[in-house]
Length: 426
RNA sequence: GGAGGGAUACCGAAGCGGUUAAACGGGGCAGACUGUAAAUCUGCUGGCCUUUGGCCUACGGAGGUUCGAAUCCUCCUCCCUCCA
View: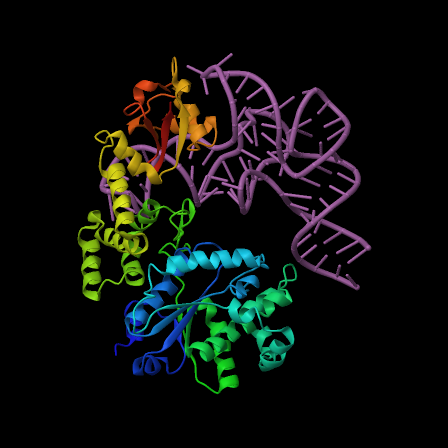
């Protein structure tokens, strides 16, 4: 069978791996798990690397398990955190787990006969175990001395200010126990995760060995950053989420289209299933004719399609085309309504446009495109404000019903990318 | 416990009695260039207004001196360094 590790290596998706993983994964179909934290109702782009890790594993014939930390989410992982985490309620964690499952279904095949993806919630075992049993059976195998030596714990212990609670300190035990349970219940022998999970993963491997005398393995992915060192997955408007309610397909698509040249090829390897030749071709295209943005387009198209489907992709592309390459003048009000379904918008009572109309300044402030009237003035003075894609020349300009597209819409724009659609309320 | 140093706008950092809504750098926003990229250049970057001007709020907090204070004095809070 195809060795999934080779795929990871070719895509720069591997940071670290324990001894013998390569043989282990090459010799037979295995069961592999990755944990997802249900701290939010949706996963965001940061989770895309692990997700793709599972996707490649499944394609190589292994069985992927997505473990939602309904139980551990109640505790909070101290790895990479500088302060104590907010605890989730049971209900919230369960609800979030539900949302996450729906998103994973876009990437993993839960239906195939041979190696369907599985979804597990560690609340199923963590929820029932008693404290005494846990301390006796599991806790016994952990050395506090070793736990305190872990980087993530050490940092928090040295920080007099924040410190670390016993709850978070115990996190590694729970995650290790997850691995043990998955080994017992599902025959899972490999845990993967972000590079910050390395410590937790190796601890789990130890536990499986001690309690079951079995050999388990771990693989970690690199932390994705962009070329300017900033964290990946953040746009001007905050986190990019996988949930279309939180980040519309249009915004999602735009995030990828706007990726810097320097990152585009790396991201193609990380986040698409495009073949190596194809990616090499796109890399060359970036070199030769960067203005075509071929890599960015391929990236945006592939990722958006996988997550939001053909319809989502089509909508995103339509809106993109209308906004960036074309003139909205040619569009009918219906088309505009459709294209801008994703855009920030608000309603405007008809009578506000009576008489001399309504000053553009007011519209900018009310729509949130400007933070204050002074800000709105400055933007107009600087030539950065447009009504229906026509630059506003003076701060005195007022909008009347004359400006409305088919009497229904008004398109406000600030700069290149900030739009706001005003729908007229009769 | 003792001796000093500091706290300024989103961040860093000047200013040390008046022309200071506060130099400079970063960040942010916009414009030009371009490819919805990067780099570069330019403008803007407390609020409101009837905008070559006016008013209000603002240099850790509270008082005071002064015609006038971020700038001087007193007390308080918090940070840092050194000595015990």
